[in-house]
Amino acid sequence: MPLWQIGLLLLGAVWLLQAIGTWLQMRHYREVMGSIHERWTDGYMGVGNARSSLGRGVILILVVGPDDTVRDLLVMEGRSVFAKFSRLDQFQGRDVGSLLENEAFATQRGRRQALEQAIQQIEKAKLRKGEATAALQGQPA
Image (cartoon, helix red, strand yellow):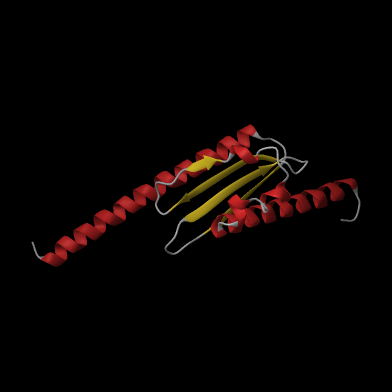
């Protein structure tokens, strides 16, 4: 078998493994999101990500209550499709604003970027909910 055919077979095998790994990671992501929706029926959720070409990518899920306290904070960091979410329990019950000042986010650029995106999503959701509530009550937004 010529060398170029072996190369094509190896490339196809690597592509297939990547596709399977991506499918497994997306299934894990959907399971985590589903469990969050079942666990928390009020409040807000934001998701942020930070991509890196060579370093570790970050996906962060932030769940806050109506009083802006952190209910859940999950982070997935890694370079491969084998990365899993880890829960950061030490931040539960804290104010959302205090997260940006914490060294776990201040010193790690990827985590900080993902957290800022999640907070922006939460702020937009609050704004939309306020506009919808005002519209239902017949008040101008």
